[in-house]
Image (cartoon, rainbow, N blue to C red):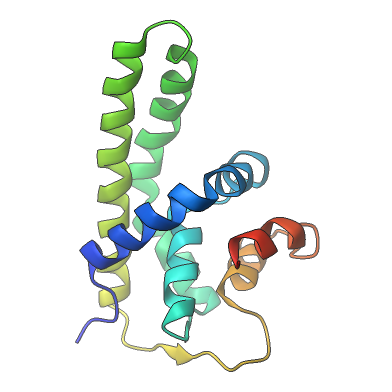
Length: 150
C-alpha cells in the first residue's frame, strides 16, 4: 500500500501553503529549495516517516522536467502581475497545474521506493535532512524552518 496518495498530499499542500506562503517562498527564492519537496517533508513528518539522502536525490531527479518548466513560468508570472491581471491569472493557473503535476511525480517516485524509515523523536527531521541533501546549512535556515514546523 503506497504511503503517499497524490490527492491527499495536494490537499495538505493547499492548506499548508495558504498558512505559510511567505516562509515557503522565502525558502524557495533565497535558498533554492523546492516548495513541493518542503511540503512533502512536512506531510511525511506528520506520518512519522523519514526520508533518506538517497530518496531526496531521487525526488530531485523525478521533478527535474517540471522544474525546468516552472522556473521560467514563475518568473514571467511575477513580471506580469503589475501589468496585466488577466494574463497573470492565466499564468498562475498554468503554474498551479504544473505544481500539481510535480507533486504527482514526487508521489510516483516514492511509490517506487519501499524502504521508509520510521522517524525517531530525536535526530534530524525531514526538513533538516532536505537542507543537508541540498548542501544548505540547517543552522542558517533554523528560523524559517521553525516557522514551517509550527
